[in-house]
Structures are given as structure tokens and as C-alpha cells.
Image (cartoon, rainbow, N blue to C red; front, side, top):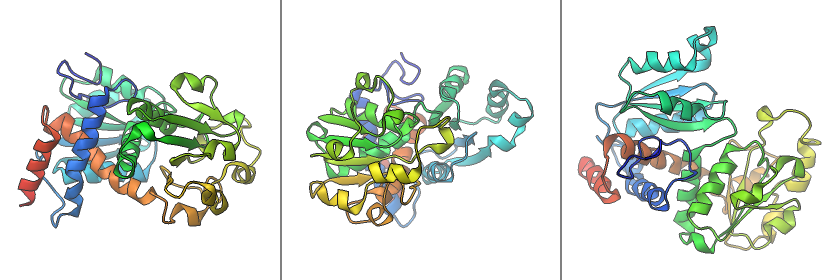
Length: 331
């Protein structure tokens, strides 16, 4: 039994994509598909987590991610608490264990944790009371599992056969937890080819061991790809001199309309947001007809609902069972 999965193969925490069985990853995506219609209903709420309490515990600010987790929990009828830990007693010398113990005393069922230290979510999961779930909303440079899941969900909606896909991830691979999680997810789902594109200073040594091929020339890296996944430059996580300038990065690696026009007509464009206009992508390309960026935001709610429901509210339930529950509630 792993920290993430119980003896029956069901989720108990979600900390990383790495090591998840393909069947479980696909089940999460199927469950998200089953719950995606909740947002289209007149009453955007189902009772799957009624009586449960979810706490968003963010040591690192992110309005977009916190908001989608909050919406997901509320659509499942959970009670939601939001804690911006940088302004809490943790800044007065309280340790992470003290914080966890104090908050668990409030009978919280799930902590959605975002932290700037890699491994923080695993640390919480190792010390959480049995029955309390930890969901990683991003930890340092390590992992952002629900972002990868919503990315896979978005791709699957348009290109369901991952075995035929060539995917290129462009930008700051070195500092990106999104890139790491996406690479793991694409490998698990059997993507035909994964490429990472960027300057040598932003491609980690040994990336080939993860199953990704490095490219330092954008045009060569984009040749014949089906999906282009752009990354926001993680300037807040950089130290030293990794870039000459954002303008130079855009010249060499930015997705412009001219570069988009050279892609195959059915190629898809994605970005986890928020975008840096004129750096990794032109504004017109970001919200053009081939972009899935806004769909990624929308799908993030369904994916996070699915993970919460599978861990807390419907252990052992199938995607079909969750769909029936959701449809019955809407009726």
C-alpha cells in the first residue's frame, strides 16, 4: 500500500502523478467527465460531500488555483475554509506539524495544501490523522497533480488516443512542477512522444530519464507535434542568471502567430496560466481559435471535484455511479 493509494487501489491522498496506475488515472478522468455536467445545471451543486469539511491551506498565494478548488468543493456541497498561511501563526514560529495538529482538531476532512517547499504535501500526508486526506495543490518545483489531470482531461476531450500524440512542452522546465507532472501523466497514458523545448539553462540535466526528449531549437521541437503546452516563466523561483531577458526568450521560444501558422492545422495550444503576454505567447494566440486555455480553467473544476469525490465522498464508487448520483440530485 502506497501513501496515495489504499490496499484496495483507491485514492487516499493525491500528492503526485508519478507512480499512479494507468487505470486509476483514467478513472479520475472518467469521473471528471461524469461530474462535468454539474456546472451546466441550473443548480450547480450535488450532495456528494455534504457534511464534509475541506480546508484550502495555502502557504503560497494563487487566487486561480484556490478559487477552482473552492468552487469544486462547494459544488460537491462541502463546507469550505480558506487559510492563507503566510498571514497565520506559522509566521510567528509555529511549525508545520503544529499547524496540522491545530487544524485537524477542527475536524477537517481534507486539506488542500499549496507550499513553496517541495515535499510539503507528502510531509502533511505522513503525519495526518487516519481518515484525513491531503490534496497537493502545488509544492515547490516538485508536483502539481491536479493541473496535470486537468491538462490530460482537456487533451482527451479533443485527442482521446494518447498513443498517437506528439506533445511539446515549452519554457522553464527546470523550475516547473507543472512540466514534471504533465510528463509523468503523459507517460502513464502512453503518449507517443514527449518533447521539452527551451534554453539549455532551463532544461534539467537527465530529463531523458523521465521519458522526454530535449530540444533547444523551437522550430525543430515543434515539427509535427499535436499538442503545444506552454509554461509561464517561473521568475519567482529562479536564482542566478537563467535568461538574458524576457524579450530574448520571446524571440527564441515565444509562440507567435507566425509559428502557430507553421504547425499542423489540428494542433492544440495549452497554457496553465496565468500567461505572460509577449513572453511565452502572444495575446492573440493565447485566446485564438486553436487555444484551449479557457477550457483548461473550466475543466479544472470538474477534475478537482472528481478527486475530492473519489477520496472523501464515494470510496469504491465507479464513474457511472457518481454520474447517476449527480443526475439524481439535479433532478
